[in-house]
Structures are given as C-alpha cells and as structure tokens.
Image 1 (cartoon, rainbow, N blue to C red):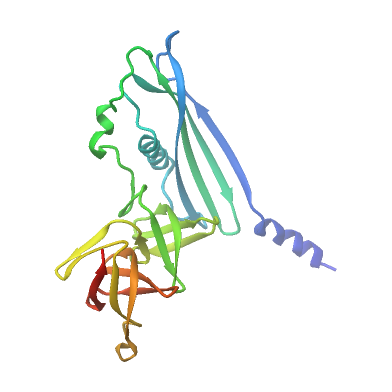
Image 2: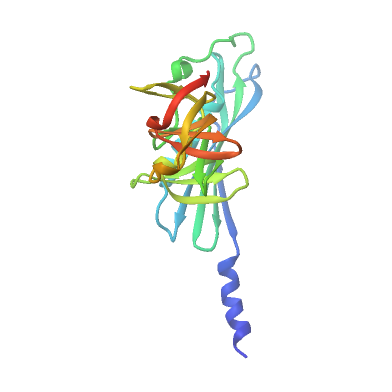
Amino acid sequence: MKKPSIYLLIIPLLCSCAVHTGMMTGNANLNSKSEIVNIASGEAKAVYILGIGGLDSKSLVKDAKDNLYINYPILKGQAYANITVDSHFAYYFLAAVHTITVTADIVNLDSDIVTNEVQSIFKGGLVQATIGAFSVTEKLGYYINEQVIEVTIIDYNEFNRYSLEDTSGVLYSDVKRKEIIQMNGGLITSNGAYRVGDVVKFNAGTEAMYKTLEQKNGTIIGIGGSKLFIKSEGKFYRASIEDIIGILKE
C-alpha cells in the first residue's frame, strides 16, 4: 500500500515550474518634447543540467543587452529609456533554463532633432553578439538522425559544447561544433568556393564506405566546419570537399 506515496514523490520530478523576477530603471532624461516611438527587446538563455553549465547572470544580461542593440539600433536624437531586466527560471526533470530578457522604450528626445542617421556605435557592425563561434543573427541548423532541423543556440560552455532549441521548443544539449550548420554564407577552399544555394554534383554515401558511393545532384543547404550539407531527392548528405565533382548552378 506504499505505492501512492512513491508516486507522489515522483510527480514533482516530472513536472516543470517557473520563477520570475524583474527590475526597471529610468535612464534617459525625458521632457515634454520626448516621445516613445517603439519598444526594443533582447534575450539570452542558459541551460543547466543538474545545476552544471551555463553562463552566470551578469554574462546573460550582457548578451541580452547586446541582442537588444542588434535588434533595435537607434538613431541620432533617440535614446533607450525605461529599461527593464526580467529573469525567468524554468525547471524541468534534470534541467533548468535561465532566460534574461532586456526591454526598453525607444524615445525621440526631441522630434525636431531626430535624424535618419544611425548612432555611430551601431555602424559597421560594431555591436555584435556571438555565442561561441556563431553570431546570434545567423540562421543555423542541427544535423541529427540524418536530418537537418532549424535551431537557435541558447548556451555555450568552455568545453566547446552548445545547447540548442528547435522551432518546436525541444532542447538539445552537449552538441559539438561540427554538428551545427551555418545555413547562410559559404566556404572557400583550395578546390574552389561554395555557397549555400549552389547546385552541385557530388559523390553520395558514407565516408567510411567508398565502395557504395554514387553520383548525385543536390543543393548546398549549409556549411558545417569543413563539411558541406547537401539536400538531394529529399535526403540530407554530409560531404567532404573531395566529394564535390563540380558546381552545376550558382
């Protein structure tokens, strides 16, 4: 008759819960000519497995602030005001996700002096947020089970491992750099230059079984380290540069 009590102990482990805190500051000097014209926001996340991993709160706040700058650069004559920092912890079975969100009102300090010129700090990509080897603005994919799924990086640790979240909210932890695909840009090698969107002829098959290789045509959908990820006939292939026979269409 002790089974119900055991179940009661297990249920909290299987459920999730959340803790939310926040703070707000004024910052900009506003006056009767000031006008709020938009709301800016930036977010950063960290994943902890059994309490291990992730960035500290100060680093998360900085990353969230950098993302706000990237998402909403301001013009000369504008300022950020009423800045809010929200901290949200979501707890799961063995993991916790810490999310920092920074929001701010974008204010025209004086509508008569606002220009169409972006403030100098935002020019030339001076404000750039990165997570490990990737920019937060990159379109990324994750190669798993011979499929490529679109993901967002939410954490990175000193062991060069990443935590990812796909478009359905599923989390992936301890992902290696080479398994993450850059789904824009290109790769320049001694054998030539390859870009996402190029249609190529390539040797398809596993790297360890060259006897089974066959030539196929496919489209490059991403770059992962020195590998090209190619989609052909509904399937995904990870090909070395040596596997590429030629570019059919650029």
